[in-house]
Image (cartoon, rainbow, N blue to C red; front, side):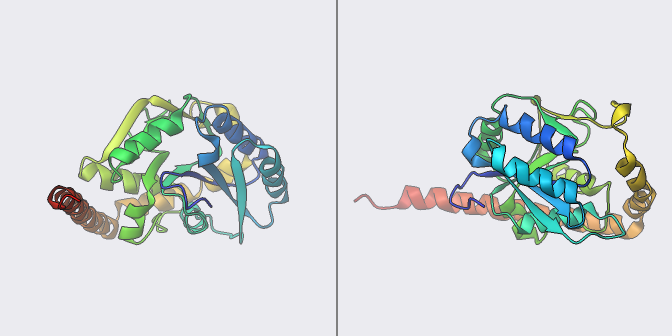
Length: 256
Protein backbone atom coordinates (compact mmCIF):
# COMPACT_ATOMS: atom_id res chain seq x y z
CA UNK A 1 0.00 0.00 0.00
CA UNK A 2 1.08 3.58 -0.60
CA UNK A 3 -1.56 5.81 0.97
CA UNK A 4 0.95 8.67 1.22
CA UNK A 5 0.69 9.22 -2.55
CA UNK A 6 -2.55 11.15 -3.26
CA UNK A 7 -2.43 10.03 -6.89
CA UNK A 8 -1.08 6.51 -6.52
CA UNK A 9 -2.31 3.87 -8.95
CA UNK A 10 -3.15 0.25 -8.21
CA UNK A 11 -4.01 -2.42 -10.78
CA UNK A 12 -6.22 -5.17 -9.38
CA UNK A 13 -6.07 -8.54 -11.15
CA UNK A 14 -7.92 -11.73 -10.25
CA UNK A 15 -6.03 -14.70 -11.71
CA UNK A 16 -5.78 -18.47 -11.61
CA UNK A 17 -3.42 -20.91 -13.33
CA UNK A 18 -2.08 -18.27 -15.70
CA UNK A 19 1.52 -17.65 -14.76
CA UNK A 20 2.36 -16.70 -18.34
CA UNK A 21 -0.34 -14.04 -18.33
CA UNK A 22 0.83 -12.69 -14.96
CA UNK A 23 4.39 -12.29 -16.22
CA UNK A 24 3.25 -10.78 -19.51
CA UNK A 25 1.04 -8.24 -17.74
CA UNK A 26 3.75 -7.17 -15.29
CA UNK A 27 6.33 -6.88 -18.06
CA UNK A 28 4.01 -4.70 -20.13
CA UNK A 29 3.29 -2.43 -17.16
CA UNK A 30 6.89 -1.99 -16.04
CA UNK A 31 8.19 -1.27 -19.55
CA UNK A 32 5.56 1.40 -20.30
CA UNK A 33 5.01 3.10 -16.94
CA UNK A 34 6.30 6.62 -16.35
CA UNK A 35 6.64 6.52 -12.53
CA UNK A 36 7.33 2.96 -11.40
CA UNK A 37 7.29 3.80 -7.71
CA UNK A 38 3.72 5.15 -8.00
CA UNK A 39 2.15 2.04 -9.55
CA UNK A 40 1.27 -1.20 -7.74
CA UNK A 41 -0.09 -4.47 -9.10
CA UNK A 42 -2.12 -6.66 -6.75
CA UNK A 43 -3.01 -10.19 -7.83
CA UNK A 44 -5.88 -12.10 -6.27
CA UNK A 45 -4.88 -15.77 -6.15
CA UNK A 46 -6.74 -18.81 -4.84
CA UNK A 47 -4.98 -20.29 -1.84
CA UNK A 48 -4.72 -23.68 -3.60
CA UNK A 49 -3.15 -22.23 -6.78
CA UNK A 50 0.49 -22.90 -5.91
CA UNK A 51 1.86 -22.09 -9.35
CA UNK A 52 0.36 -18.60 -9.38
CA UNK A 53 1.45 -18.01 -5.79
CA UNK A 54 5.02 -18.85 -6.70
CA UNK A 55 4.90 -16.67 -9.80
CA UNK A 56 3.65 -13.73 -7.74
CA UNK A 57 6.44 -14.33 -5.24
CA UNK A 58 9.04 -14.34 -8.02
CA UNK A 59 7.59 -11.17 -9.58
CA UNK A 60 7.55 -9.39 -6.21
CA UNK A 61 11.32 -9.94 -6.04
CA UNK A 62 12.25 -9.15 -9.62
CA UNK A 63 9.69 -6.72 -11.06
CA UNK A 64 10.55 -3.04 -11.44
CA UNK A 65 7.07 -2.08 -10.22
CA UNK A 66 5.55 -3.12 -6.91
CA UNK A 67 3.85 -6.51 -7.12
CA UNK A 68 2.08 -8.38 -4.35
CA UNK A 69 -0.49 -11.12 -3.97
CA UNK A 70 -3.60 -11.50 -1.86
CA UNK A 71 -4.61 -15.10 -1.23
CA UNK A 72 -8.33 -15.84 -1.29
CA UNK A 73 -10.23 -18.93 -0.30
CA UNK A 74 -11.13 -20.93 -3.42
CA UNK A 75 -14.80 -21.43 -4.20
CA UNK A 76 -16.65 -23.93 -6.35
CA UNK A 77 -18.67 -21.01 -7.71
CA UNK A 78 -16.70 -18.42 -9.65
CA UNK A 79 -17.20 -14.84 -8.50
CA UNK A 80 -14.70 -12.38 -9.93
CA UNK A 81 -16.58 -9.51 -8.31
CA UNK A 82 -16.02 -11.01 -4.86
CA UNK A 83 -12.30 -11.40 -5.51
CA UNK A 84 -12.11 -7.84 -6.84
CA UNK A 85 -13.74 -6.56 -3.65
CA UNK A 86 -11.20 -8.45 -1.55
CA UNK A 87 -8.37 -6.85 -3.53
CA UNK A 88 -9.99 -3.44 -3.24
CA UNK A 89 -10.15 -3.78 0.54
CA UNK A 90 -6.52 -4.93 0.66
CA UNK A 91 -5.27 -1.82 -1.17
CA UNK A 92 -5.58 1.90 -0.54
CA UNK A 93 -4.29 3.70 -3.62
CA UNK A 94 -6.75 6.38 -4.79
CA UNK A 95 -6.79 5.46 -8.50
CA UNK A 96 -8.01 1.90 -8.95
CA UNK A 97 -7.64 -0.16 -12.12
CA UNK A 98 -9.78 -3.21 -12.88
CA UNK A 99 -7.84 -5.44 -15.27
CA UNK A 100 -7.43 -9.06 -16.31
CA UNK A 101 -4.41 -11.31 -16.66
CA UNK A 102 -4.97 -11.27 -20.43
CA UNK A 103 -4.26 -7.55 -20.87
CA UNK A 104 -1.11 -5.96 -22.27
CA UNK A 105 -0.31 -2.29 -21.61
CA UNK A 106 0.96 -0.81 -24.88
CA UNK A 107 1.07 2.98 -24.39
CA UNK A 108 4.25 4.57 -23.07
CA UNK A 109 3.59 6.82 -20.07
CA UNK A 110 0.01 5.60 -19.67
CA UNK A 111 0.12 6.23 -15.91
CA UNK A 112 0.95 9.93 -16.37
CA UNK A 113 -2.08 10.27 -18.67
CA UNK A 114 -4.34 8.47 -16.20
CA UNK A 115 -3.07 10.51 -13.26
CA UNK A 116 -3.52 13.79 -15.17
CA UNK A 117 -7.14 13.02 -16.02
CA UNK A 118 -8.05 12.18 -12.43
CA UNK A 119 -6.36 15.31 -11.16
CA UNK A 120 -8.85 17.22 -13.28
CA UNK A 121 -11.89 15.19 -12.18
CA UNK A 122 -12.17 12.17 -9.89
CA UNK A 123 -15.75 11.33 -10.90
CA UNK A 124 -14.86 9.58 -14.15
CA UNK A 125 -14.57 6.07 -15.51
CA UNK A 126 -11.41 6.20 -17.58
CA UNK A 127 -10.73 3.53 -20.17
CA UNK A 128 -8.62 3.03 -23.24
CA UNK A 129 -8.68 1.10 -26.49
CA UNK A 130 -8.66 -2.64 -25.79
CA UNK A 131 -8.57 -3.40 -29.53
CA UNK A 132 -11.72 -5.49 -29.06
CA UNK A 133 -14.59 -3.27 -27.90
CA UNK A 134 -12.74 -0.13 -29.03
CA UNK A 135 -14.69 2.27 -26.84
CA UNK A 136 -18.10 0.61 -27.06
CA UNK A 137 -17.72 -0.84 -23.56
CA UNK A 138 -15.30 -0.14 -20.72
CA UNK A 139 -14.05 -3.69 -20.23
CA UNK A 140 -10.95 -2.60 -18.28
CA UNK A 141 -10.92 0.75 -16.58
CA UNK A 142 -9.74 3.11 -13.86
CA UNK A 143 -11.99 4.74 -11.28
CA UNK A 144 -11.34 6.71 -8.10
CA UNK A 145 -11.59 5.14 -4.65
CA UNK A 146 -13.50 8.10 -3.27
CA UNK A 147 -16.40 7.38 -5.64
CA UNK A 148 -16.66 3.74 -4.62
CA UNK A 149 -16.30 4.54 -0.92
CA UNK A 150 -19.10 7.11 -1.20
CA UNK A 151 -21.39 4.62 -2.96
CA UNK A 152 -20.44 1.87 -0.52
CA UNK A 153 -18.94 -0.80 -2.79
CA UNK A 154 -16.45 -1.55 -5.53
CA UNK A 155 -17.89 -4.41 -7.59
CA UNK A 156 -21.44 -5.72 -7.74
CA UNK A 157 -21.30 -9.32 -6.53
CA UNK A 158 -24.56 -10.24 -8.26
CA UNK A 159 -22.39 -10.85 -11.32
CA UNK A 160 -19.83 -13.65 -11.29
CA UNK A 161 -17.92 -13.16 -14.54
CA UNK A 162 -19.46 -10.83 -17.11
CA UNK A 163 -21.46 -7.62 -16.65
CA UNK A 164 -19.15 -6.62 -13.78
CA UNK A 165 -17.75 -3.98 -16.12
CA UNK A 166 -21.10 -3.28 -17.80
CA UNK A 167 -22.64 -2.27 -14.48
CA UNK A 168 -20.21 0.62 -13.98
CA UNK A 169 -20.12 1.43 -17.68
CA UNK A 170 -23.87 2.13 -17.64
CA UNK A 171 -23.77 4.11 -14.40
CA UNK A 172 -20.97 6.44 -15.47
CA UNK A 173 -22.39 6.84 -18.98
CA UNK A 174 -25.73 7.90 -17.47
CA UNK A 175 -24.05 11.11 -16.29
CA UNK A 176 -21.65 11.37 -19.23
CA UNK A 177 -18.74 10.56 -16.93
CA UNK A 178 -17.31 7.77 -19.09
CA UNK A 179 -14.01 8.94 -20.54
CA UNK A 180 -12.65 6.97 -23.45
CA UNK A 181 -9.05 7.75 -24.43
CA UNK A 182 -8.38 5.94 -27.74
CA UNK A 183 -4.66 6.67 -27.59
CA UNK A 184 -4.40 4.61 -24.40
CA UNK A 185 -3.88 1.05 -25.60
CA UNK A 186 -4.67 -1.65 -23.05
CA UNK A 187 -4.89 -4.61 -25.39
CA UNK A 188 -7.25 -7.40 -24.36
CA UNK A 189 -5.92 -10.71 -25.64
CA UNK A 190 -9.41 -12.23 -25.68
CA UNK A 191 -10.00 -15.62 -27.34
CA UNK A 192 -12.44 -13.90 -29.69
CA UNK A 193 -9.51 -12.23 -31.43
CA UNK A 194 -6.75 -14.56 -30.18
CA UNK A 195 -8.27 -18.09 -30.38
CA UNK A 196 -5.01 -19.62 -29.17
CA UNK A 197 -5.62 -18.00 -25.77
CA UNK A 198 -8.73 -20.07 -25.06
CA UNK A 199 -7.54 -22.29 -22.22
CA UNK A 200 -9.18 -24.76 -19.83
CA UNK A 201 -9.92 -22.04 -17.30
CA UNK A 202 -11.74 -19.93 -19.89
CA UNK A 203 -13.82 -22.93 -20.96
CA UNK A 204 -14.63 -23.92 -17.37
CA UNK A 205 -15.76 -20.42 -16.49
CA UNK A 206 -17.90 -20.01 -19.59
CA UNK A 207 -20.80 -21.74 -17.83
CA UNK A 208 -21.36 -18.66 -15.65
CA UNK A 209 -22.03 -16.41 -18.63
CA UNK A 210 -25.67 -17.40 -19.13
CA UNK A 211 -26.44 -16.92 -15.43
CA UNK A 212 -24.92 -13.43 -15.48
CA UNK A 213 -26.85 -12.56 -18.62
CA UNK A 214 -30.12 -13.63 -17.03
CA UNK A 215 -29.32 -11.57 -13.94
CA UNK A 216 -28.53 -8.51 -16.04
CA UNK A 217 -31.79 -8.71 -17.98
CA UNK A 218 -33.95 -9.27 -14.90
CA UNK A 219 -36.45 -6.62 -13.90
CA UNK A 220 -34.94 -6.50 -10.43
CA UNK A 221 -31.49 -5.71 -11.77
CA UNK A 222 -32.76 -3.01 -14.10
CA UNK A 223 -34.52 -1.42 -11.13
CA UNK A 224 -31.32 -1.60 -9.09
CA UNK A 225 -29.37 -0.09 -11.97
CA UNK A 226 -31.72 2.89 -12.22
CA UNK A 227 -31.43 3.41 -8.47
CA UNK A 228 -27.64 3.42 -8.65
CA UNK A 229 -27.69 5.85 -11.55
CA UNK A 230 -29.71 8.21 -9.40
CA UNK A 231 -27.38 7.77 -6.44
CA UNK A 232 -24.43 8.52 -8.71
CA UNK A 233 -26.18 11.65 -10.03
CA UNK A 234 -26.58 12.94 -6.48
CA UNK A 235 -22.95 12.15 -5.71
CA UNK A 236 -21.85 14.18 -8.72
CA UNK A 237 -23.97 17.07 -7.48
CA UNK A 238 -22.45 16.80 -3.99
CA UNK A 239 -18.90 16.80 -5.36
CA UNK A 240 -19.70 19.83 -7.51
CA UNK A 241 -20.98 21.69 -4.45
CA UNK A 242 -17.79 20.84 -2.57
CA UNK A 243 -15.69 22.29 -5.40
CA UNK A 244 -17.72 25.48 -5.39
CA UNK A 245 -17.31 25.84 -1.61
CA UNK A 246 -13.55 25.31 -1.91
CA UNK A 247 -13.26 27.99 -4.58
CA UNK A 248 -15.39 30.44 -2.61
CA UNK A 249 -13.40 29.76 0.52
CA UNK A 250 -10.16 30.58 -1.27
CA UNK A 251 -11.67 33.67 -2.86
CA UNK A 252 -13.17 35.04 0.37
CA UNK A 253 -10.18 34.25 2.60
CA UNK A 254 -8.87 37.57 3.98
CA UNK A 255 -5.32 38.56 3.02
CA UNK A 256 -2.60 37.99 5.58
